[in-house]
Length: 245
Image 1 (cartoon, rainbow, N blue to C red):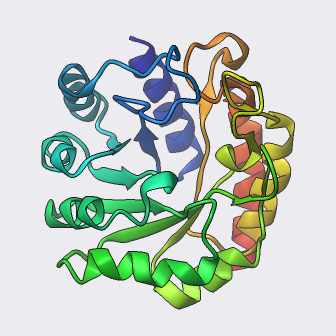
Image 2 (image 1 turned 180 degrees about the horizontal axis):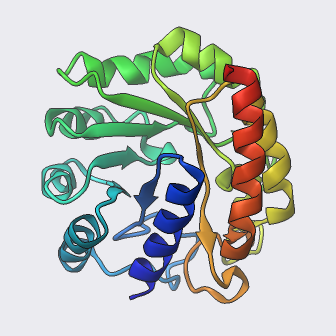
Image 3 (image 1 turned 180 degrees about the vertical axis):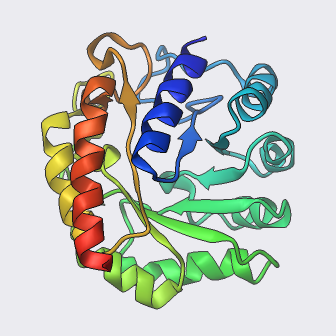
């Protein structure tokens, strides 16, 4: 029910603002910091939920895949397959995602330079799928810290030819920074998002929740409160209009 509540609210908001919207949800958070962390409903249980979201709300859905075997299953129920940053060089996973024919969103690994991404993208395009998106989510900067180099966005756009998305919430993450879980600082999201949009990115990835401080989901400290989304999106739209107008 929470997925429907959030997706419905975001659909209403984005339609009112006149912007595109893809809803992202995970069936399995396979890379949680600790073994005891909540992982999700699982592959089989989540697919009917994705079907219902697409049918009843008329929205596009994205989910992340972690093994080659999951790709064909997930692709029947979502519009976009996402390759997690930690797995962006896994050739078998990239090929399997490509061969489904779905749009593939690849998150750049925190350990990669922006000019490393053309090789990643070619693994998908050379497998017969030109529908590739590249998402920037920050670069490792010492222990438990990420930094966002805005130069990476135009560099990847130029070198890959793919639409570039900026992940404004995972970029403020402190990986493993709370010991048994990752920390973060959502107050930094608007600053990075505005800077990224000013470079001319194709889209922005933002995790949001109606009560992020009390969610059992991952990345609560990074999530933008749902009540703050309208104001943030209006700012980003204004910047985007100037840059692309």
